[in-house]
Image (cartoon, rainbow, N blue to C red; front, side):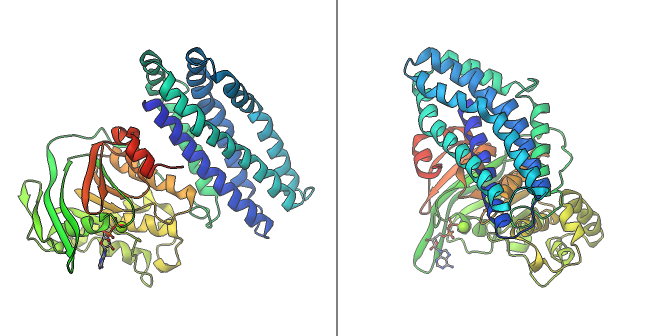
Length: 438
Ligand SMILES: Nc1ncnc2c1ncn2[C@@H]1O[C@H](COP(=O)(O)OP(=O)(O)O)[C@@H](O)[C@H]1O
Ligand SMILES: [Mg+2]
């Protein structure tokens, strides 16, 4: 049921976009400058992505087959498809309101109202599909239906669903992030993109943890964790607040004592090595809450990430980080404390990359970020993954993390309770119920 995962992920992204539009509508009404190019880029994205990709996925495949298999679906689907058909007209009306507000012919609160009524409609539509259509599809569609849908959605050369179309949608989304004001985006500049390298190589385990235990005083926070990460793999460790995710990463990088268990990295037992030695071996972490050094400049924060590396490579590496995150280059001499949350997260990832990781540990990179930036951070991680980086990603945002992960582990109060491929975990009812609620 990869197809349903794709549709749900679309819904998640649209939901975040709607939330962002609501926030900016409120700011505009409250006296902030009208962000014309931001709203225009949102409308362009909705025009292109929703009309050309998301709706065809539903209308031409999911809904069409559901009508065949479930006689009761027609009423529900008729209403949703009528809504789809009204989409372009609604966007045209929004563009008209935006232009009128930009010219001073429409009051800003009226524009805000128009935007909010649009996003309320969008959200209601998404909820109806998530709560009614997707469960119905799960129960009513046959294996041959899924084969047909999945085949269409996964076809890399398809003009609607294929890689080229996806790249175009990503570019449109980048434009939204780069035109968004700092309260919701990165602040007026592109988040940049990495040139994509060749396919990753998969081989045997790079990291093998067995029976890891760790305590705070008499409280055992990790009760025997075993976990493997293969070369080039992205592994997600998900679980609720307090499950022990951060403790696991800190124990792995050696800043938290391990009371039992073994850690093997690239065939070497590193259980007794000090944390700086582990970093030299290539285990580099972007910590929870980012922990950038506020008074130091962006450049100096990045240099700190390279302290285990030969001096002469730091400047070259920093330029690479700047290509990836142009906003950091622009602000390179400013104190890191002046950066927004999203920018600080980019800096924290950049600082970890300065250590030339062979395995990158990311502790809740999406935590506390504006909704628009959550997706942006996951795009950065996807790009690193596509370049062959081995990544251990810790997240409470389970759906997004499992979606980009090859495999995942679910952690509950210090124990691994489930493991499987990212897709297996996403479709697991227990996981869905516990972590994926929208
Ligand atoms: N410094 C600490 N002192 C005592 N207990 C701690 C400390 N840090 C975390 N814990 C406890 O260890 C457990 C795991 O915490 P943590 O690893 O931070 O979880 P997560 O990252 O999954 O939210 C929690 O019960 C938490 O209360
Ligand atoms: Mg944590």
